[in-house]
Length: 302
Image 1: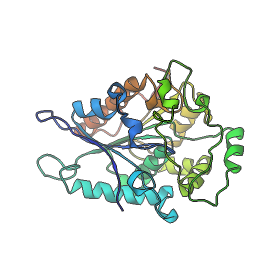
Image 2: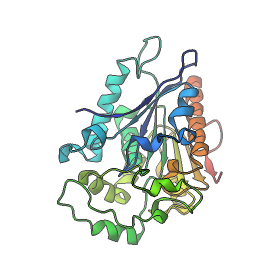
Image 3: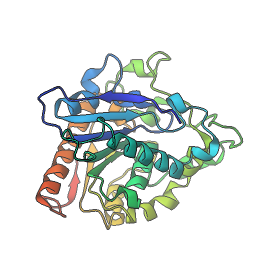
Image 4: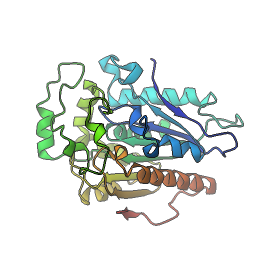
């Protein structure tokens, strides 16, 4: 399988931190994390400046692997592919420690459908050594209206013909919180959603709780202030904390000024810096051999 993506490396002389593996959401691509002409909103730019090697991958079924066989598009199949990729990267200069002593620490940053893949990776025994996981827009619960829209999607084809409710209000915050060019044909960060992925994601309110119970890595869980594609009231991060019973620690956060597509808003830099701060805390905790957070677990509305 050939996969595509965006790679950023630290400049020479910058102390390396590890590999930051970024997974985009459904109907998107790696450019979600780094858009041409919008470096100030990029995850890759500040992460590389701080010492991270960043790989924003086009998940299986997207980019160079579009048209992948349906049985290889599901979330569990994607987990297998991405672990194989991490193994390969760990044996090369991309995902290895600079001194060649072994694979570098791996931190996952993921959005929406990609968050479901990342959480499955963290719940898998192969993910027991992950440094940490930061997820935004993870669909823990859908509204009845959204579930009805999903149920109406015909499932015979290779791709989802319509996700329903695809207005700017569904995935973006109010006007002024994002670049309106993102709604144009030329500026959209969009791709067709593979059907097998969609079928798994549709079931996430039933399957995700069991996944979360098996996660042991530290987790940073973000909901958007103007989330409208799913249920996102204060009860959702509270429920996530309760379900993540095995995680070494959990931080929940409401990102102000954004809709579902958090990294496509003017507040993306604030969100990305928060993710990178969490990743740094995970590094410090690992270096200290700590199994608990340096601060008490709790929500943030910052």
